[in-house]
Length: 75
Image (cartoon, rainbow, N blue to C red; front, side):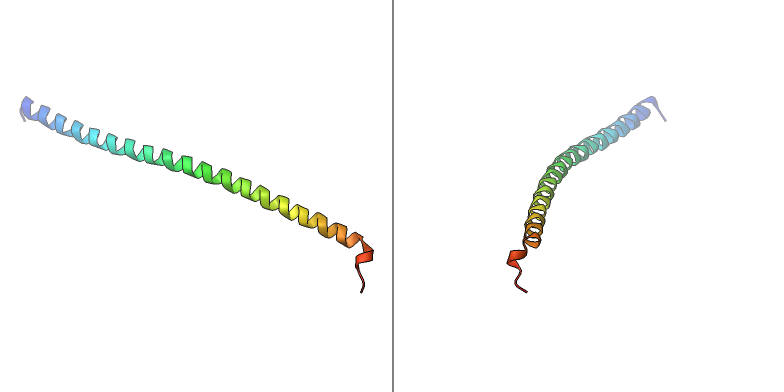
């Protein structure tokens, strides 16, 4: 193999590596965007869960007050 052929082979390999690196960069960028979306969804779910738990607590407080008030029970 001549020096020129070796250089051509190296250049070809480097171009392939460059293409692979560009593909990886695109995938990483996509993953970063996905992670931002996941974090946003987790924050929303956390807020929703807190809201639901607050509402459940209010219902329990109302039920406890109702159970303690014997005047509303006629049976």
